Image (tube, rainbow, N blue to C red; front, side):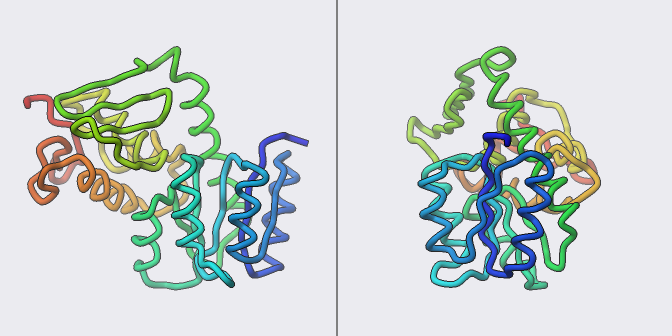
Length: 234
């Protein structure tokens, strides 16, 4: 059994067990719980490398579970919901989720996304000392790559692993324009699944954290009709 543990918090027993079985076939240790309170307890007990959370859960909903996990860890978090509106998606990403899927969903697609997130997360973590500078500073921004920490004006700002990777990619390539598709592939690690507009949501969240005025961004600029770039002329 792979020592990599994945926490699944899903109150639909059939779906939860199906996802667990798929992950076990792939060699992961899947920890399945059916309510938010138990999910938080299992997070602290088992220390998983990734969490998959339904939004609608008994006792404590998935949004709160995500928020509590994010306070403690930068592991990838994928949210699921049967709601058709984008409200839960935006809220979920806003509190630190790395990805979102709408139900009904394919367990095979879900597992593909999980593997992609873990591949990117592990690659970034395992190679950061060899391929990245430990500390990256630019004006009032500082990224501590070993710790996945962002500082703005010397004050630590909470970011998810995906927010950190996006900002790190752009800051490491100041002036280079990336399309949404390129960012999605480089940071999320796949192109076949998902909503490309997730990139837009993340850019908005990052701007809120690093810009003095997010409505007039100085660091991350939109190149209309193309994508985004980190301003290299400040």
